[in-house]
Length: 94
Length: 211
Image 1 (cartoon, helix red, strand yellow):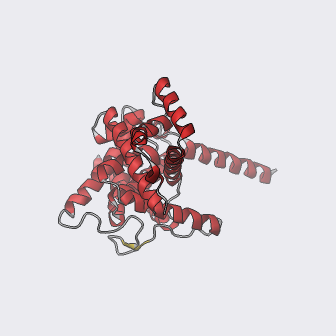
Image 2 (cartoon, helix red, strand yellow):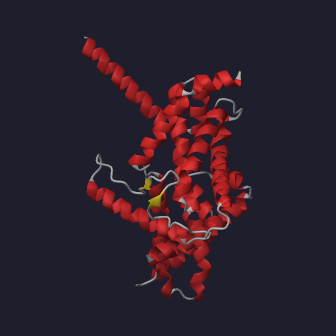
Image 3 (tube, each protein chain N blue to C red):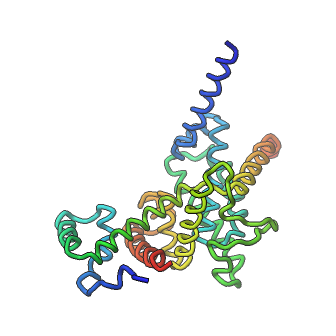
């Protein structure tokens, strides 16, 4: 299996952590331009950047995943049970 | 005429439900404080969703999810009506869920850290089957298969990332909290959140690429 980092030389290593900040738009303009110049000439770093973007996208997708139906059903049942017992709870609190 | 009115009522109800689903935590809390029962139900469901995902993705303990969900449910019910700053609710909820998971972990201090893999199946505390990717008959089976495979890869990769990095990537990337909210939940600086996030992404990417 080809690992995207396998073709990186020592010059590229310094870019790796900055690529994450680059994706988040946190780098100053000068650093951003340096990275963009490097990316044009370095297919390995370009591949790492794509892989990083893919990782972030996969995480975002996970956050949009619904609960499994059986878990959702149990969650609804818990809510109904809690709200059904509200008058008794409030009476006890008084 | 009666049918038209009924349709209109259904449409209004549907719009109202969609508005609640898309509402921020703070807006839901404000509605709860004005006595809106349906917003309370939406908030209680979200609290359980958060607890479920956190138990699975950060703690790697599906069998702790029920306890964490129950805790999130009860505390949200008690707290939502009286929190003074609705904007602070979301960070409070994640802190509550994190603490519930930590308590579950301490109870099992003598057990191995990764007793159940993040994409594994098992039995929950009540003896019910745990089904991480149960099939939803309402959705396209092919889409479900692709998503299920992607989720399994992500969960395997997450379980290989150290917990103090994993929690940051879950809160920031999966749950969508801001850097400031993550810092509040974990009690660390925003700079530390960013540093951990960048390292976590790198580790996660390497594990995802290797899978």
